[in-house]
Image (tube, rainbow, N blue to C red; front, side, top):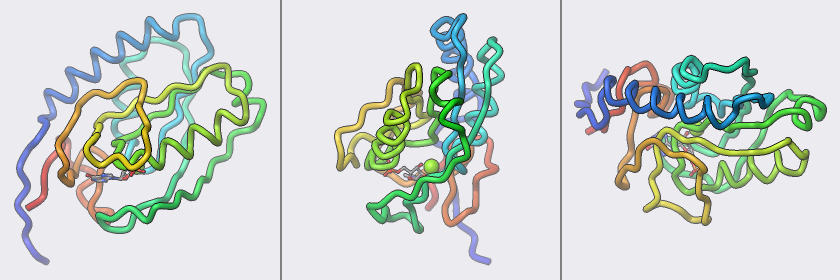
Amino acid sequence: MSQNSISCLISEQELQQTICQYGTILTQEYQDKPLLLLGVLSGSFLFLADLCRQIKLPLEIAFIRAKSYLGTQSQGSVQIDYNLTEEQIRTHHILLVEDIVDTGLTLTKLTEKLQSQHPLSLKTITLLDKPARRTVPFQPDYHLFTIEDQFVIGYGLDYDERYRNLPYIGVLH
Ligand code: IMP
Ligand code: MG
């Protein structure tokens, strides 16, 4: 197996501190509202796990799958898969939780699909934003970190399904 070197871009401590701050913001924002956190699989699983514990409200959690990536290249099309009922969507404020916004295609497609089913409200939060790579003009409602045009791994993000378990965001060399 080849040995790649990884440099740390965002430390575990920096991630946790910022997530804690956003937890406080979201706790205020969704006070007395039925909140559904909808994690985009698989990359958001650690971010969602840490974020949900910082939102001090009786929220619900579900996942949605959007496949658009092979290796490091976007394929340009998005396949959507979830098992929420129309009733669940119509009766909740949905916060879509994503690992990274790159071309913007995934969240554009997901928000279009969900909006068509009339949630009480729909917002998006992404851990990372890579605005230099946008091909569609998508703006997340919340982004915790803006990064340069580089391929990152760790804290849920993979390179061919590896490195998701790193506790920090790194760059692979
Ligand atoms: P978009 O549709 O181009 O915005 O791509 C979003 C998806 O691409 C993310 O949910 C990630 O799964 C994947 N992705 C984009 N950039 C990176 C990266 O730097 N590292 C790992 N995955 C990435
Ligand atoms: Mg993803």
